[in-house]
Image (cartoon, rainbow, N blue to C red; front, top):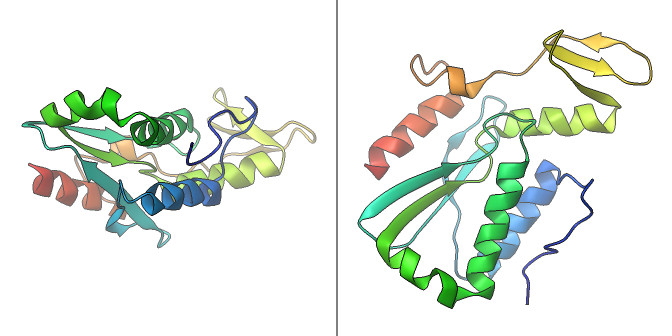
Length: 168
């Protein structure tokens, strides 16, 4: 039986609290555990899961940008599939050790949840948000973690660097 609904409506984007619920559901199966590797700039826990026992190592980082939710959905579906069809994953997991980070940027995810709930959408020409009802613009975009790996100014990238060092 599926840990959670595999086929939500196509228009449904899981909010950050809904993602956490799905992570808890996966943990309850006993097949996965979630480990904390730091805190976000706004104090939210940063989580990862580690599984497989192969020599090759890969890391899957999801939702580095708060607006890019499909990677998180796909990763949670992949983990759910590992529970439903373990025989299909057995060979791969003997060859790989995998770390998954379901939400690299939880603050951005929460911000995007708020934006969607209040009728805003991304508008790349203004590098901000626009409210589709009122036409108002919001130019404050959250930080962009993928541009901070070198300088490591933010807690998310600092924590990620420590996790990478530990993983290697």
